[in-house]
Length: 300
Image (cartoon, rainbow, N blue to C red; front, side):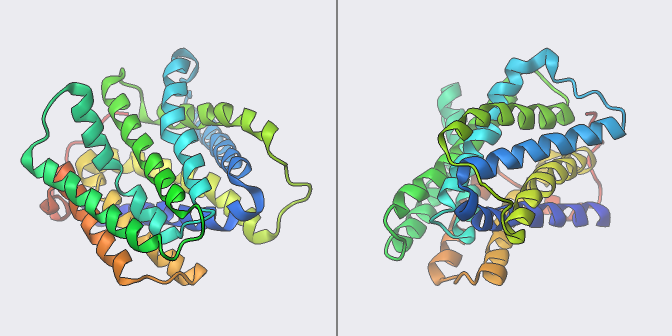
C-alpha cells in the first residue's frame, strides 16, 4: 500500500468516524427524519454535480428497482436508526456498534446460503456478541430511559449494512459510482414521506447544526463515497476493509475532543473485543496493510 492510499484510508476513516459526531450535534435540533433527509439529499446533489463535472452518466434509470432496495438497506433505514440512537448514545458507542456490520453480514450470509460458519468465524461472532454485551451491560447503568432500545437500534443499523452487503454480492454487477448516486437518490425518495409526520424547522438552525448537516451530506456521504471507490480501485476491497477497524478509533477521538465524552474502561475493552471479533469473522489479513504491492486495479 503506497503513501497516497494510506492517507486516503486514514482520511476516509476520520470522515466516517466524524459522522457520529455530526449526528450528535444535529439530531437534537432537527430530529432524525429531517437530519437524515437533508444528509442524503445533499449527498445526491453533490454526486450529481460531480457526475456532471466529469461528464459521467449516473446510470440510475435502467436499474431503479435495484437502487431502491440498496438505498433502503444501505442508507435510508440504517442512517435513520443511527440518528435516532444518537439522541441517546454517545458518538463513541455508536461508532463501536457500527463496527459490528461485518459480523452481521457473516451471520446473515451463513443463514441465507444455509452454510456453516468456520470455527474462526464462529469465534469472532461470539466475541462480537460478548463485546456488545459488555458495552450494553455497563452503559445501561448510566444511560437514560430508552438507552437499551437505542443500543438495539444502533445494532439494527449495523444489521442493515450486513443485509446490504449480502444483497450486493448476489445482485447483478453495477458500477460503484452508479451505486453511490442511486443509493443516495433512492434514500432521498424513501425518506421524503417521513417529513410529513414531523415538524419542520421554521428558521435556519444555528451555525453548528447547519455545518453538521452540510458535513454529513457533502463530506460524510458524497466525498466519502468517492474516497472509498478510489481505494477499492487502487488497493482492492480486502485492504479497504481496514476502514472498519479505524472508524471506531476516530469516532471515540472526535467524541472525546468535541463533545467531552468520557471513555471508560468498558468502552476501550468492548471496542477491542468487537474489533477482534470483526477481524476473525472477516478473516482480514493484517499483513495486507503492510504489503508494498497493490492488487491489480479494478474497473468501475
